[in-house]
Figure 1 (cartoon, rainbow, N blue to C red):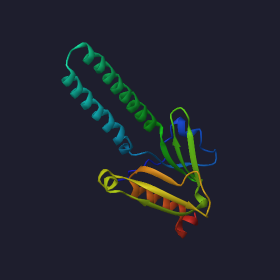
Figure 2 (figure 1 turned 120 degrees about the horizontal axis):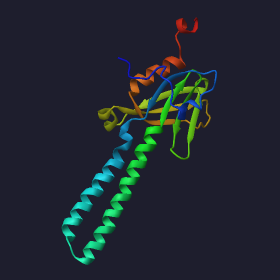
Figure 3 (figure 1 turned 120 degrees about the vertical axis):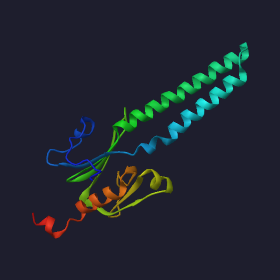
Length: 177
């Protein structure tokens, strides 16, 4: 079973950064675990707001405080929706020539590293990453600082690692084609 999207057409938010002579090979959205903290903040805020609502009850002073508490929770909820929207447009793309990480909803950021410049690539997984199925890629190039040096929250890191390494270091049979 292949867990990586091959040959699917990239969304227009990514496709506009591909060069005419390169082909998309791998495209994945970052792992949803990137949203764990915003989810925890919204749920924690909801619990606090509910407890404060029960504690303050009615009363005029309590009513004003409750309005402020619920408005603060609403701001947390809006922030969560924003994070989900940002996550939905973030992609890690490997083309025939380079690796790209596109991020940002309003301010679009595209970090890129040519495949030919990659001298070393590794991945690491935290305990939570192993449990949830994500990892972090660490890319190095010949002593140069690059715009793309780490990619966090990569889904299927072992599969992607092997796929990218196969592109970086093709076998002799692949290079004869």
